[in-house]
Length: 170
Image (cartoon, rainbow, N blue to C red; front, side):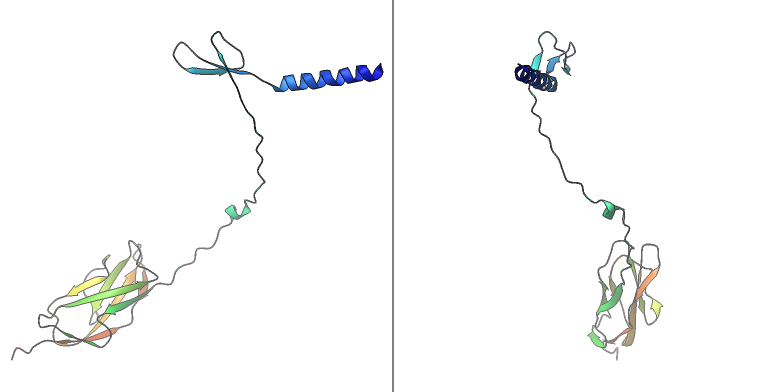
């Protein structure tokens, strides 16, 4: 008899536990046409069937997100790509195109300034190609300087020499 009462008690508890876990949800549209969800049924409400899946994810160590790495300043290098050092340029009009190369790469807002025979050719510009016009015959030196967006000098090229050959006026 005790076993039967104990068995009935356990069955009753399990049925109450399962019944308490099942919540019913109803949905309907109100007078304004808005969809409403509730656990209390209204006339014309439809029961919504829910499926529940327990999702668990392992915890992740987020300490790496708080680490601040020191910013490394890239060492920039600038050089004159053309004309090559000690190259002879044969151009009767005296035109020379100077191309520069920035390593690791030319970034936006950087400025380059060209110096011809030690004198600034123009103000610093955002281009790395320059056109020289009516260059006199003879030996000329070229040098370029690289400036960051704040105007700070960050690289200077070695001096490059080129020779301009033009026909003589005689």
